[in-house]
Length: 394
Image (cartoon, rainbow, N blue to C red; front, side, top):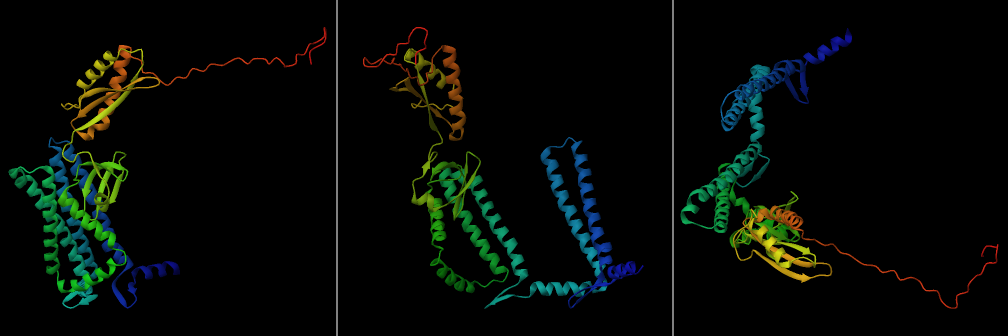
């Protein structure tokens, strides 16, 4: 009984945290806040599940269903947050205003003061929407330019990329600076920051600054752009995004490679699609010396004409390369419309060469070696053993 009494006393006693004497107990916290909150979460899940089942039996489009569920989640989450706030207010009772005002004072208390700049937790929290708005505004401006202005002026893709990115970053910087001033950060303090940055440049930020200016060079001079297939420093892949400091490339093994921008300005870059996305693939093949070479050339030309990836051009030819040790070596050069189809086009051509050669009886030889074994000759001075009759030779 004493243990039960101690447990009940512990659960019903007001919580004390150092100098703070909370106006509620553990039992009150569980019964008035935690359990109602868990109930609201369960109800949230049940309502979403029910609405999803109802939408599944309707004939609405998937996009409309997704939009309904999206906004329904927002509304239900707001209701859950409101319910949690009411539960906390009910728990605190008459002292809710005291605790709320104390909490707000704690958030507004500055922990860094420099001139007219006073940075508090509220200031840092307000920077989150500032970052979001600057990023969103930059993307939105670029989207507007690409959808309206660029099409009217008939700009090519490379010029769109350069102007769009420069405009995007310019708008982002303007919105960010305006937002910083709105939350109360004095830009006169930036002089101190720039001084610290100058010291840091001498201790290891040279690479970051070099990559930053390399990013500006990439955006303005357009040696690469998003969507290009490039090979740089042994990496071969598609450019996913170009940032001020680095560039992301996705390889054909589905690996994301982050390369510093200086790699694209200090070394040679192989851009497969700088001005044209067409590319020539070369399928080499060897045939037997007994083959009718004119027939082989016609078969390869027919395969090239049936290529579904083919683009018209003088590069679609068959070349006789060399007379090798075991075969006559030829090359089928095929121009394809889209460089991203290089692997598929190369594989398709090889398969068609294999099928057509088997059907037409064209032999694809493999390396062969003929080995002659010369019989050993007995030397004249070699002794000969003669066995006596009835005795084995030793």
